[in-house]
Length: 262
Length: 221
Image 1 (cartoon, rainbow over the protein chains, first blue to last red):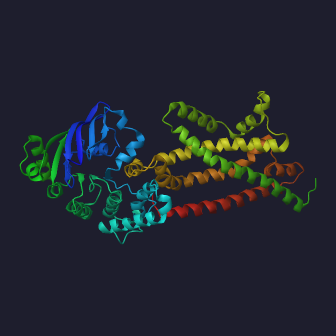
Image 2: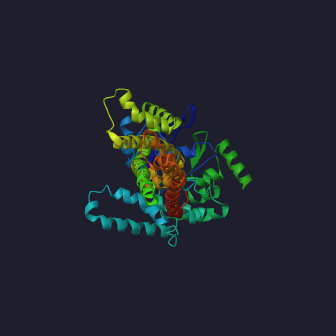
Image 3: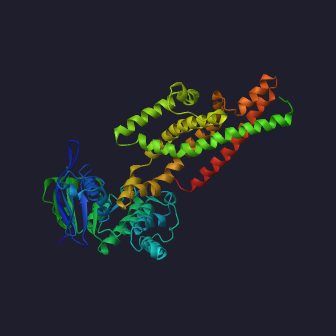
């Protein structure tokens, strides 16, 4: 059974159809790269998965559980959506770290707030909080920032900020971790350190959906690639098939443009 | 009326306490009320936002002096089933109410600007981490808003110190009104002295506001 199944997902902004019936599924431990030109709907797709946009049509199923059905309002209660979001993590293009908190505080803030909802929180408050703190340190170490625990975001480089953002998303232990062009806001010399972290997550079989413009990265890291254009999936398959032997003319043109510019 | 210097100083000081009291009460009530008004003016429901914005427009668009007079005299002149307490106490309460309403409206606009200046990415980052709207407001955006609104809020607070003198229009015996009584008897220096009171008070506030702004310099937003 796939961990994520998306069926006929549609999204309109006014009369503009940004997503025109997206179908795909994702297996546990798989990393999926979504490529395509700007305005093809990649980011909107990620935002729909994270309920930052409400899809106008289609269904989203996680672990066999239908968590969103556009035709069934009972799957769209505001209070449930908050819980359902936790299936997904999202790393933003612009990091969106909380500026008034240190790297470690950024990572542990949400887990600590969620822990308050546990029934045993009152009794074991200290243990629970120190456990979260400990885990936060470990995750920051995992992304190579054990020496920046107490640094505020403005003291960090873009690459370091994005790594804190990845740690923050990981700390919530999402089923599926989504990346929205994680290196697009970075100077070229800083993209490497972020890609390295994502690569190591892939080697640990983290289930990921990565929207990216880094074609070489997508080709080497992803288990599967989706090429989107004008709100629809044009082609999907193993990276070697999509990059090496694209079947559709539009895919060929897109990849050609990229190889020319890089 | 005695014209001895220590007596005059004592009377000026006593009346300046009234300015200080009006200042403190206005601040304590208008800051939280301003936040409520700010949320009202930003409400998605036009039934709330339109009347609130109209109210803010009226309060900010008319002189505080006029509002003082209407709030003090209005209930009696319009035969409302409501009266201010008799005597100087009633005048002071009326003045305080007028100041709170007026300043809440000014603060609400500062708060609204501050809240709306926070990038949407901050709300979205909180949301995808499973935070509730209240958690996002109190844990993520509030401190950033406070940092951004400190300079304009400080300006408004300093203006409030000096505006308290307007209460004399409904015969609240604040410091300038008190000094005016001496001017009528040919003494000009008490009027200048009132300026010193204001300068010192504003000076202390400026230091305090600067301290808070420096405290918030540890992060950039």
